[in-house]
Image 1 (tube, rainbow, N blue to C red):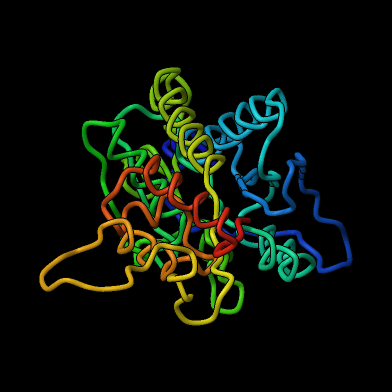
Image 2: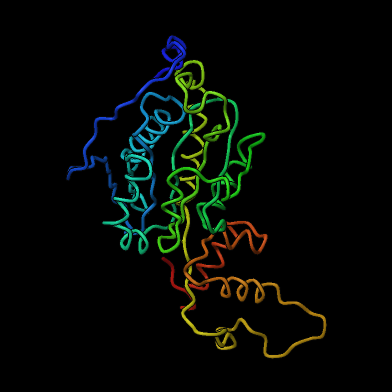
Length: 298
């Protein structure tokens, strides 16, 4: 019921009858799978259950649709993209019941796309673990592209990240929003409208942040060490045959530092941040280690 209708109701006691039945039925969702070179996937999920609310619901559908159209036009995608349109909570739980084992195996990153249409703020809500590649890249893109944003904690969750990140599911899903649900005055009211809350500029801002995050994810590689424990590098002519007190072999240290993080879970971006080196320098070193058969790349 709209607030304007509620104001017309006279004070008094009312009896409400909800005419409902429990019966077997169907749950309709939308799903797009855009194949890339890899079976590893990036997931985008948005909700379709409150279409009367512009920022809370419609904005997510609009931005996700345009992200899908953009991805479909791109050639030679590295990763595959799974894009979901479903009712909040019941939709994600039903989808996970059928697909969570596959998703756990193949999803490298994901974003819950909601509240991406107003022009008041940018917001970041991390995954439950808080240190996935979706978290690090999403927050990095915000840091580099907007003057300020509000960072929430996992304790502030409220969308389908609750299901995707729940114990036993543990998908790497974060949220990149404009004004977060529950944090703007028109939330869950009939005042959450296009034009007054959601604007073209707001939608474009939400779209661009997610697009830039996906672009950076596309550039990622995940190195995996081919040896258990540190490899014997002398035969590779990397490790010196004699040492000098207080001397540091920077190239050797860089290679060993890269190898220690090469577990298939740390991306190029994450390793470069841990080592405080440019991605270009780390990538060059990774491919040298690959050429020496010390690493494989996925």
